[in-house]
Image (tube, rainbow over all chains, first blue to last red; front, top):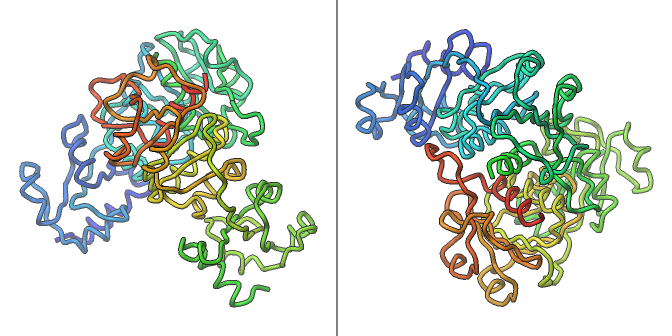
Length: 240
Length: 240
């Protein structure tokens, strides 16, 4: 049984304003929930349908009906369980390893994919401009499929952050050097830009090296690759 | 003014069954339409709002209202123009260059992204299993952003196609050789598999070489990369 207030709280968390106010976010579905239960994230409350109760008994789930779940779920096909987790507090950034920086990435699907890529390629620090889509957005949480639990994500003023780092700053632009011909440092920052406009001018000025993925097809009219696929290619290059 | 029959025809094309029956598909929005108008695809009929009429006068557009456009549009924000184009007839496959093969890729967004990647990396032949999502699906057309016009796409029985080719067949699996250590031929086939299950067993048996993108992070729990990002990394590797 779900109370009116619970229903209201959970659906309000679709909006960033209320996630910030309550310092909570929603995680759904058997597979993703399991990764969050094992993670650093603190569980606030978990709801599940009867058939799933025995699997998560230790977390004292509140039983709800399929119908109630479908009303609070953000998934096309709700999947047995929905949890509220506490937003983790920011950790200090360390000038070590490969750090990925996102300048105004807007699409939740892209951010989710990029978080998965960070997980795969062992990038443990992701730094986002305050204009980048919220990583606790439901679509981001679900698209990143648990990878969010293995990453530290910081939202900050990029200009100030990049002005104060001692690391070399690489950035993906349309007029840089070819990926192959660049020497890539182990401790470094890689900046990826907005879906339509790329890296903003203020940030481009702070780059120490501009990288471009060569376009093989001269007849192609596309101006750039999708930011998630470009990130995939560059992280793979940095990790070799 | 849009007739009832036109409305019915256009909305029916959201379904593959009717696209096949009428041999037509829908393209929308100023940018994407322009690429299709310049392409090999034959225009059947074009509709636009009044403010866009002068830009495409030569194609004799039928004027419709914003309201009519919003009713037939598949976009969240309809954008002035919608065209019906004829589905292009299949061309013969040639055993030359790098050919990308998709085994049951289901997600339209993934196929759209992969079509853009083919365009960028100069892969001119894309071969899909008959179980792969239809490339004339509206979401695929819009996600590929005109790249569809610079590519030949064939749906066929993969097993039979791969049994008869003389090209080496590379395939992305979880237990292959590392991408770096593989010698990549210029004329070759690269097979990518389904989002959840990868390459099917029947097809895996036909591979001459299995490739795996190394996972850098041993603590990561993700089993695989998204098929579009994996395709990006491998096409970039093949094109070096």
